[in-house]
Image (tube, rainbow, N blue to C red; front, side):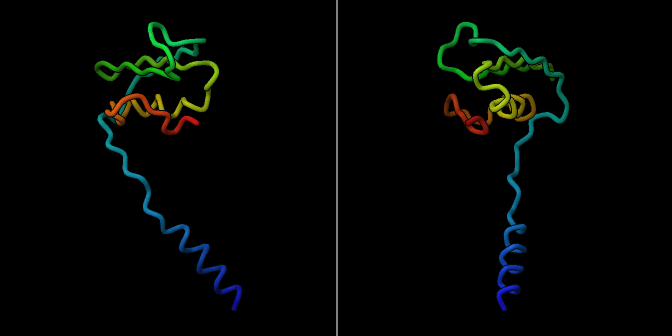
Length: 91
């Protein structure tokens, strides 16, 4: 009986719906700079700037590689957090 319950719980965990991302592009050329601080900005962990599928990413050394996924998402999804700076996927 216990085995059946454990198996049911394990299978139910796999049925989670994957997060859907609102992709703006499916291809990008990305240049990444690891820096001590973001030029002209304070208190940012990273910054992405994209134009015509070419993206430049600045990421602070203190949060590399933790925030790398967050900044790369900007290359494909654009501004996925329009309310302002976010630490999603970062910490």
